[in-house]
Amino acid sequence: MIRWYADNSELQGIWAAEIPEILLYGGICVSDEGKHQLESIIRDLKTRYDQSCDFPLKWNFRDLRNYYRRQGREELYHRLLSDSERWRRHIFRMISGVDFSIIASLILSYGTDRAVLRRTRDDLTRFVFSNALMRVGLHISELRPERAEVILDWPPERKRYLFDEEYRSGYWNGVTHDGQVTFDSGPLKELRFSDSPFFANMDDCVLLQLSDLIIGAVKEMVNYSLGRSRGFFGLNRVREVRHRLRGAPNHVIGRGISISPRRGELFDRVSGTVNGLFN
Image (tube, rainbow, N blue to C red; front, side):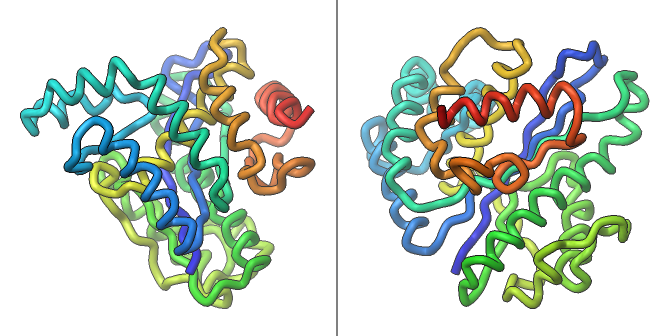
């Protein structure tokens, strides 16, 4: 069994858009054996802060403040927050020795106006998800496991139908929902994918938490590429797991990280940074 645990993010580019115009979707493909190894690493780390291990981690840990407040665990929250750089370094260093593959997709909107971006957000979400899913299909077609599953974090605004429809079309017909793009892997049902994606709560799913950490680092790498971040923390975390990017070392762009459009400043800057990780 191989599962793809995936999460979404968004970020502001450098084109003066009124709201974030870059969508990022992706996560990790991992076997049962790798899953158990990764879960063990995360849980061992958590026991250093609380023996229960029943609390979530995220790249942007401040997002969890209300969660910990509702649980009455604000003291634990503040300890984790103050130590966040240390435990993120530890996690990335430890997981680099586990066999898994990172697959993600980036898309830049063609507009900068707030109303246009909001009106096209659903279509962009469909595209960035299906674009990543196509790479997962190719990955599974190469490995040929007995079964494959897709585990997704609950989508914002309860727009699960966007992912259900794209997945259903890829599963039965091997095309995107609009019929414009064909999956090079063929229909996902022929590759023994489950007949529907599964949705889970990141707060309770260790592997979705890890996907959030990895996609958070990728987001920081994109920010660095665009000159929006002068720090190297996220970039260095991606560097630690660079050999886990699908297609590494020479074919990450297009195989492990898909960037749309395929020409332009976003593509040039991000692909330049990714290629630099291996030089």
